[in-house]
Length: 302
Ligand SMILES: Cc1cc2nc3c(=O)[nH]c(=O)nc-3n(C[C@H](O)[C@H](O)[C@H](O)COP(=O)(O)OP(=O)(O)OC[C@H]3O[C@@H](n4cnc5c(N)ncnc54)[C@H](O)[C@@H]3O)c2cc1C
Image (cartoon, rainbow, N blue to C red; front, side):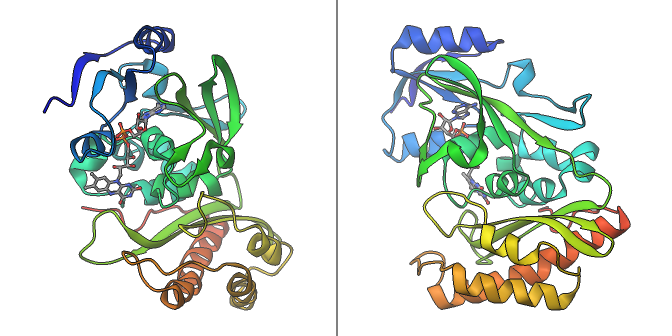
């Protein structure tokens, strides 16, 4: 079976859009292909007349810090590239940690952050961190180039706001962690598994005078789309950066968050327990990084 007929490697957004328009819905964007090609091969997607590869478009394959301190991260930047970035290690430690556990080295070498988001699975590891970083996505949607808040990129499990036969996810923008700010990501999964986390958690904190001045938390998969745990964030704001505040936030999380039993992941009670475990691992780590300014990523895969 042929998975596609024509394969194009445009070098600009305009060229990619022209190619998609030319094929009128019979061509689809591809980046690393680690989701798409598996799905076509397994019959979950029809073979395509053409694939339009976005990994030769310069603005989509680079990341840098803008003059205003925000980070630009192209959608076609690979997980490996993110893991190796000194800039992102300091500015977005949770993203480096989450991309570092995606699949194995082969998957990380070609799989991209944009493919992770465009695939729209609520368990996407890179996606979970982009939600905690409060990223905004640069997209061409219905012919209009625009910014979209990350949480609005998802319409349901596996359902993106974008139609990859006509729209493009160009990249992301988010604020770099600054002084007294830091983030962390941890994931719990079956040791024998490769692609199905039981639960992942990304947190970002800002400290002021020993207090948690602000916090952002993303725990996934819990709902149909990636989302912030805003009630848990609220419970942390203004509290001392200590274990008692973290336990208080865990109590709130247990009231508010209810992961479902999943045949493949784990039972609901077990996953509920894991929320506490993840918050006890990520929050102290992020708080410590924010206090010391040291960001040494943990748990990066071999
Ligand atoms: C063995 C294995 C293990 C894996 N483990 C993990 C894991 O641990 N954690 C995890 O999160 N994921 C995992 N994945 C899933 C996958 O590798 C990631 O989601 C990866 O980031 C997808 O990126 P990609 O570039 O390969 O996407 P592709 O497969 O190229 O594309 C995915 C989808 O997004 C669309 N698309 C791609 N780029 C764009 C764009 N710029 N604009 C609009 N639409 C676009 C495509 O048309 C397609 O629908 C695993 C996959 C495999 C095969």
